[in-house]
Image (cartoon, rainbow over all chains, first blue to last red; front, side):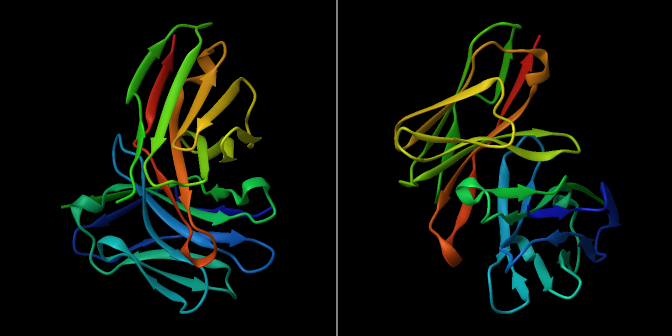
Length: 115
Length: 114
C-alpha cells in the first residue's frame, strides 16, 4: 500500500527564518503527492500538489515543495516563515491501488512560528 | 470557489444516540469522502461515495454508515454513538481526474460523545 511519513511531530522556527516540513513516501509507480494545511478549528486547505513535470512545485501562501525521486521525499518549504504560518501540515499521497483512489495522509506536523 | 459545508461545527451527544453528520458540496463533484482526524493518526478514511447511491468502505467503517441520495449531499451516520467515536470529522469532495484532481475539505465537525 502507498504511504507517507512525516518524521517530525512539531517544528519550531523563528519568524523570518526558513521553514521546512519533511515528508517521505512509499509508493509503487509514479506518485501523486499533496500538501494540506489546517489552521486551528478549521478544515484542511489545499496548498500544492505534484503530479508530474518540474520537481519544484509552487503553491499557495508562498509555499513550495521539492519532489526528490531518489530520496523518495516531498518536503514543504517556505523561505521566510510568518507567525500566521503556525498550523498543522499534512502530506498525502494518492493511492491508485485502493478503492476510490483514496488519499493516504501522514500523521501531521505542527508548525510553531515564534515572533 | 469550491465550497464544502458541514451542518455542524460542534456536537455533543450521549452514548447510544443516533448521530447524523451532513455534508454538502456545490461543485457537482462525483466523489465525496468522510474522514476522522485524531491526534498523531492523521486522517483516516471512513467511507466514500463515487456517485449517487454508491458507497464504498474506507479503512475504518465499523460503527458508521453513510447515505448519498443526492449528488451534492453525503451523510455520515453513527447508528449508536460510543465514546471512542469522539473525534473531528471531515468531509471532502474531489474534482477532476489526473493532473486536475484536487480534493477539497469542509470545515469539520468536532463530535464529543459522553
